[in-house]
Amino acid sequence: MDPGTEDVLDAVGPRLRALRRDRGITLADLAATTGVSESTLSRLESGQRRATLELLLPLARTYDVPLDDLVGAPRTGDPRIHLKPIHRFGMTFIPLSRRPGGVQAFKMLIPAQPEPVEPALKTHEGFEWLYVLNGHLRLVVGARDLTLPPGEAAEFDTSLPHWLGSADGGAVEVLILFGTHGMRAHVRAEPNT
Image 1 (cartoon, rainbow, N blue to C red):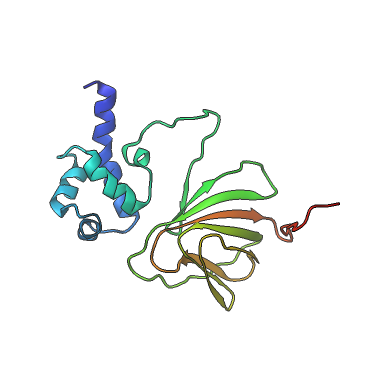
Image 2: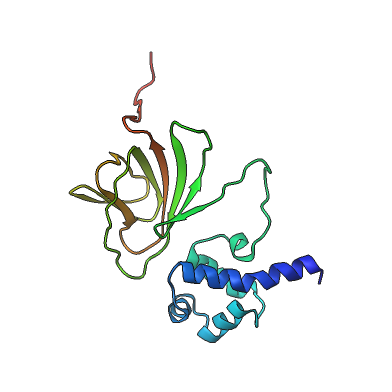
């Protein structure tokens, strides 16, 4: 095996351990979710066992990340585009636009949550539009508590206390457009004549 491949394989265990700890998941919880024994997961994380596709697939599903992220595969595609994920509040935000100022676009991933999460409302300047791609989003804005299924959209002033999370404990994918305070979406239902 070439040294580069060896280095990639050696880094899988520590990467898996860091991901599990960042998500606040115990080995016992991970074993119950994936069907992989605690001892196998422990040996995998410590480097005493090599990663196989059979072990990595359930982990990728549980963490809701691509296999490439688990093994640290090199980026492919257009070398000018580097979508570096941002991890905040237990969620992952993938920037889709790079234009300074104006509207910013993100794909937000909310991981599956085995326990219900109590909303922690936040405020900040700006205006947000969102569209649910997958899962069921719980959106709390002020006194309103909504569940949005795939295909639903919402917009709100982010100076109002708000929170986004999973409505049913499953993973959620959302497209978000964030603009400066006072910007509103312009929706056209009919073409100009």
